[in-house]
Length: 357
Image 1 (cartoon, rainbow, N blue to C red):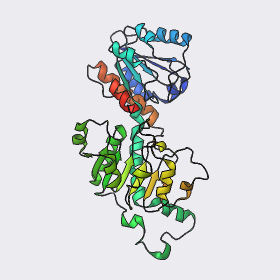
Image 2: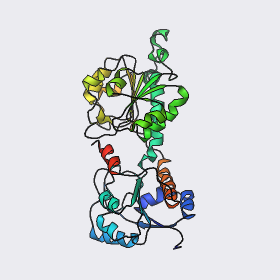
Image 3: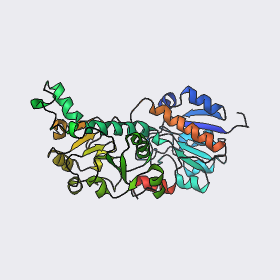
Image 4: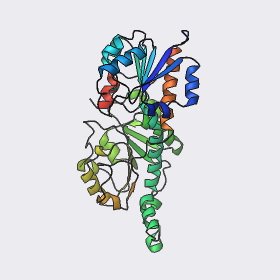
């Protein structure tokens, strides 16, 4: 390897190697660094650290011992204290995606060694924000009921009149009052999408720095205010012990008639029985990409509600996401080895916020 450039390695399985680092981004990385890949196949899931194998740990140490930066993803062993202690050149660790709680990295050991740790999980935030915008407009247009009528061969406006159609009464996003529940990467991107519509925006997020409200021009407020005082409610909160079933009968009954409710986060933030009960009144419209449980049971009443538009948890699933995770990581590596600060650092505060502590 060329010693003038940092040595950067990727530890992951074959699927990640094939689908994530597209050629253009690898070429960009190789302009300022020496790159190598090592296949690893440790099992892990979304909520737990990889299974331990002494053989894999030894292999990882051998791979990493001369690296300045290590990128990890699916298949990688745990970046343990032992790995960190035996890799003295390591200055940067990056998690590509699918590990919001850094289960693949011993953060305590990394922080003690003053290693810069980042993740690019938010690469999937781009399409989620787009679909949140799309579902908001679909809800305002009463698209769910119109679609059901069309495929059933019914007249679009039964009785020949638009006057009672919610999509006629409230069919525009222009200058509406919009409330966000949660305002992380997805919320901030969505706020930029909302700007051309001149919406007035309100945000409930107890973990948000106050200066964010000034930067993105919204009013920080309570959950109760968001639920009871806007035209479109958009749920973007992560699922944590504190947010599970956060919105039940009491909260849902705060929502006034004519409101559109959008959820692109996690279905379990809402109590499903209470949500179905509220929607059965037919005075609000819901656009839902997520539900609890998933897939939605075939006999669930929500499948047949005219005032509900459903999609099968597709908001963050696009072909462009996988190379984007790597593209953002290359951006971060470029910043770091150019002497700049990285944008997407993991810290005690980051993980605490994500876990809702």
